Length: 144
Image 1 (tube, helix red, strand yellow):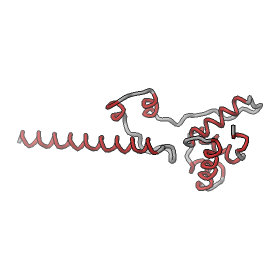
Image 2 (cartoon, rainbow, N blue to C red; image 1 turned 180 degrees about the vertical axis):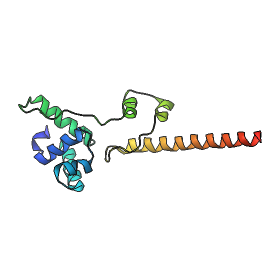
Image 3 (spheres, rainbow, N blue to C red; image 1 turned 135 degrees about the horizontal axis):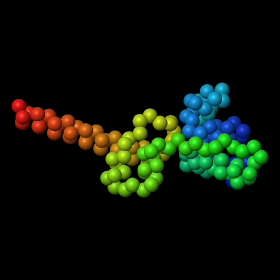
Image 4 (cartoon, helix red, strand yellow; image 1 turned 90 degrees about the horizontal axis):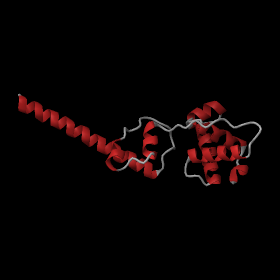
């Protein structure tokens, strides 16, 4: 695997990603700029052939664990939310769209398909709220 080609800075950044830290948090921890952190992580993703920063961090830690290093790497702390876990568990159809929308979160974690799904969920949630408001308003008009 290409883990041996990673620089120590890239490995450090990926270990901190595995702990669920954002680029800004990693920058504060390492004394780098957030842009430098993103560059290190982007280059590491390309070297490892990963799809995103979490996959790259997971690949690094799995490789280090398989080599049984004397100094063990820091444990993985998954930054996944409850909503992410529900989606991975295979909820289907309409229930997938009704899972609560995560607020905030980490930058650079979503791929294009996940961004599209999130936008769809936000839109559907907005329409449902709007319909509920209209229904209440019409109900109030008929009462008075």
